[in-house]
Image (tube, rainbow, N blue to C red; front, side, top):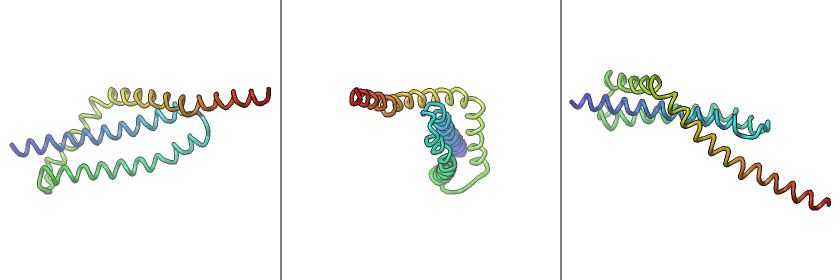
Length: 135
């Protein structure tokens, strides 16, 4: 019975790892599509991609190791790896399209508000002040 619990916890950690990658992927997609098309901003988004990948791999590895340490007393067994892989495959096969679109929509909404408040509105205000000074 304990093995079944450990298997399910590893499957849950596999689902969390795949969900974290979907969040990272949706953020990349939303930031490239919503942010203003300035070359500097796009260059920043492109340059930070490997950093995000490295951070995701480190976090996924830490979650995997911590789950093994907490639930299996640090003993690596074959069914634990199988549980982790089953969790990842279940998420990718059944949930990634729905959650990916929901997360992408959420990030697009947040970035639209952010660009409006901190990019478009200040530019409009500055343009109005410039027109008043010249008139």
